[in-house]
Amino acid sequence: MAITFFYIDDDDVQKASEKVQGFESSDLKILTIQHRSTWEKQINYLKEKQDSFDGLILDLRLDDYPNEEDQRADFRGTSLAQEIRTRQKEGDFKTFPIVLFSANEKLEKSLENSGKDLFDVCIDKGHIGGDSYSELGPKLEALAQGYRILQDSQTDLLKSLNVDVKIIDERFISELNNLAKHPIHVIARFLLNELLLKQGLLIDEQLLAARLGVDKNSSEDWDKLLASLLKTEYRGVFSTGWRRWWMPLVNAWWYDEIGASTYLRSTSASKRVQAIIDKFGYKLCVAEKIDKSGSDEFWTICQGYNRPLDPVDGLLIDGQENLYPWQDEKYVSVDAALKRKNIDVWRAVAKLEEEHLRDLEEQYRKRR
Image (cartoon, rainbow, N blue to C red; front, side, top):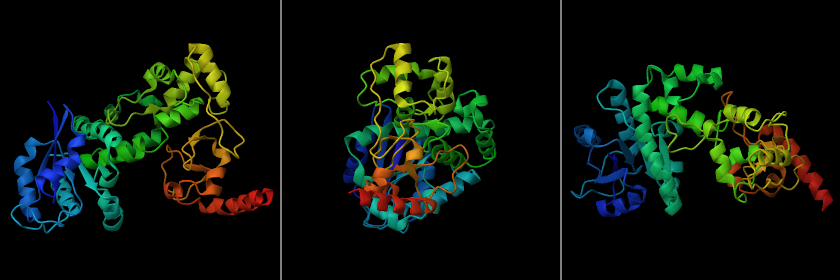
């Protein structure tokens, strides 16, 4: 049975439907409806129809245009989401994911961090197209499925991870177990934002390639290598929307399957790749260092070039003071920092790195 999301917008139904039809598939349907004039009417409508949908997609500014009855909404997406979350906590509403679908400019101007906490995912209307539709559609499905899984496993949330808990950092286990009595949307946001969307216990495909020393885009047998890592892949809640790998299991694979005698972390990219080739015979290419980098013991991704980097050759990025112990810090390479490459992504280096960056700027200026 297909998963159904309701999409509430202030635009007319036909125009609004065109914005979200790219997300749809045989397993996902999105029904577009116009806003009601007051949030009370909107809440009552959703409560009456709650058995007909599995999730909600909201525009932020529901008060820009009048509906078909020529009535403007007296509320915004955040206030509607807040009321729904409150009623879900009280048991007056079934639990379901809420997705914010709005223009990034409006998000930056109108949405505080507390407002973002109401939504499982925020999607920028201005940056969606063919590839993003195909990526985001499965995420919407995974959200709806994940909420059901969390409801079924709320008395034992570790079951939702579908893995031997012995490999998991005990500090993560403690934090997750502390959320057992919280509303499902709080648990869902914790898992999404602190486990799946931050590198650490789980890593994404790009970081997996970097830590194996592989240039995945140039490697003919990258998919075969992924198949050999099947047992390390995350199969827990939300995994159908966010593909990830357990880093502790990748380390174990390095020893058990490859038969390595050195730490993966302290092995050069060329030796990592050669060991994999010797074991499987795959056609793989070694990832190359970024300019001004000395080490190819890659362990992170440069936020400026989006390429493999050893943290010793990078500068710590600002704003990471509150990471959990199981999460990895982000870095920008020296070359990217000096050239301000993609600075809108990493914005600034950490305060403790500022003097180092100034020294590097002076050093390389003298070499010209």
